[in-house]
Image (cartoon, rainbow, N blue to C red; front, top):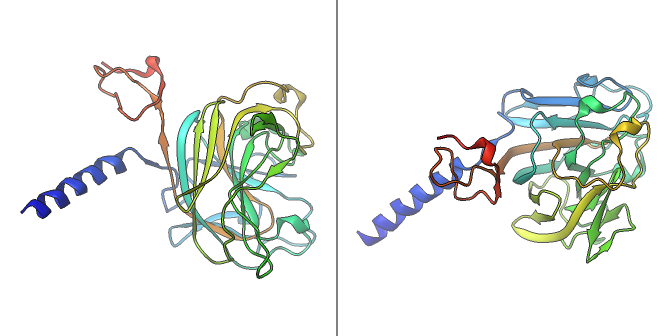
Length: 278
């Protein structure tokens, strides 16, 4: 009887915890998402790059022709976030698009605290954002960790000092092509960022700000160097390597922290008093 009660209690707790999460991807289509691909206008999903099949969000290039021509793309969720816990599963599949930059082989990622894609010019190559970079094994026995940090148009502080490298390696294991990997991001505004791979904390850094990084073709009004990145959009990346995403969901950690409010949540860690409902 005691075991039965414990199982029921655990089931109820799990259900309550699951309610705290919001699915960003509905498993059917790209509703709620906006595409921006380099050389194309915002909203033009050139070549059906981002698509849905069998409840999986796919990145594909079978409708591309000719040289890759740096057609880097991103699929943006239409709501910005500030304090949040994001998770998803990804896997690399298929053949890398021949002619894409060599470093994009078995390489992709998720961008966060990104600028709104509607503020990007047609010839802007990457969004001003911070990236949780995904990599997979290319050569057997050669370490290639995933869950790294890259900083297009941004700066971060790592081990107490401003990072001088565009990308910082995580401490994760190396995973082969074809294997599903669970990636999690915990982002607390412009303070702390944590990268988690398959349940293991692999990288921590702080203070994301607008700054350096290899972006081109941007509107100068959008790049105010030194400005703290307190919030922004989340975007899945396309760089010439086919891959799949699933279970893309988020727990918003910012909201009403007044216990008397109808929409109070005990797991919020950042107060948004204006959102309280009584």
